[in-house]
Image 1 (cartoon, helix red, strand yellow):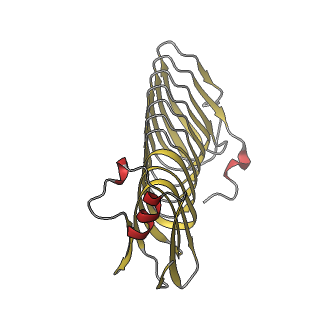
Image 2 (cartoon, helix red, strand yellow):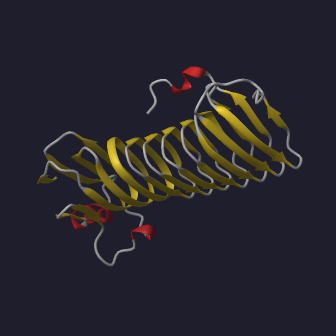
Image 3 (cartoon, one colour):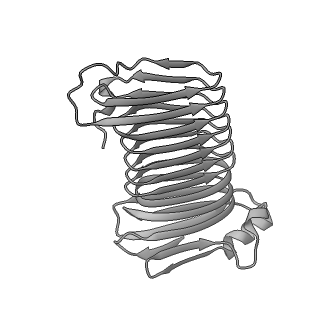
Length: 269
């Protein structure tokens, strides 16, 4: 167990081969880090003893021994950290379950495979995966996500969003800012958008977007062979200062734009 006395947020720089990463950002006046082996092999036990955990100024560094290639290692570690609320983290793992509970300022997560769970981010999120599936809560700042085939689910996204995905599916509960989305065969499903410029390009994946009923919608929907369903009454009289512009393009994927439920944006930031 490593422990440091600190009340202010820190910036975490964490590297892990295989295994699990569990970080909690909460109200506390210290930092605690525990590293254990997921099995009893000598290699894992040695990796636990040789993993470095240091606090330098505002940066908490957790990394394998110098000169090791953790991305090619079969070592499996269980890393748990408890840090002050509103901390930031840069997490680089090969294949692991990554859990980030609590409230964070900024997060940068890079993983090949595994699973990702994030609760709440007040700042920016950068997410890069190959096949990992991700569940993300609220994002208050800018969001950048790239995935080859992993599925990603978001809660409310307040900042601008850029998403590039191969065959994985994206689901967003609510959005109130610009979105740039590009996909090969993955599907996009947005339950409700409140405002912003939504620009989407998909080859064979479908696009499904709900529009808040209090928002004026300007639609530009195009598909070569896919079916387009427009359930928005653009001729209606909506007394609102909020507007959303949709530029949706697919090759063979279907496009469906509909009126979202009014309660979708209740209790959202």
